[in-house]
Image (cartoon, rainbow, N blue to C red; front, top):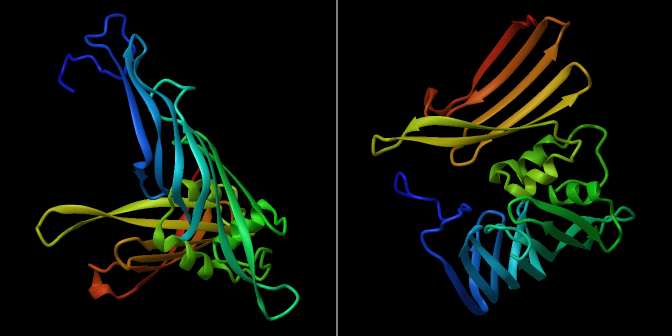
Length: 273
């Protein structure tokens, strides 16, 4: 967009140009591909530019596709994108998908297959996610299964390594973040960027994704894992009293100290005002 030029997406009382184009796509003609989903679509749309701006009208049927949630692939059973309700390019979404999850039986040493279903609604940018299963597991239990955990909480607290292995190494997409906010298993979610030079001499950013859990009122555990590199942080904080905080850290950066782990122990004083 050039300086001084009107944004074609914005409403204006005197648009410089108008459009009303009818678009038709056979099944599997259009494709949406990102970290959250891969959808193949077809249908009829109108591309309109008028006083309200530039927008789409019409619907697209989802002919086939998949949704990715914590490394689990859900095959799309049916779906539709509806562009008729809002101005712009963010459609209302109505997609149902399913996957098969193998889990340990509660009554024997055998494994069983549980069919898990997901329904994604609202808008493509801000989806609302609902889960169900053959055996009627609760939403929290299904979320735990998708993380590779037992559907019922482990009161011994031995789930942190499982959680990191099943989710953090891949990073969280938008569907996964919506789930993570609801899980009592995760209290904090952070994305840090590590700045480092590449072989070409330019500077790039490597993401470090961390999750944290408060274990009681005074103890906090955080585990962070690099997405591209084998960077890793493990931090344990103990609140001694209102002002004193004891922090232990195990840190590894692949471009520091020949990739070896370093250990830090800090006593911090907190002053609030």
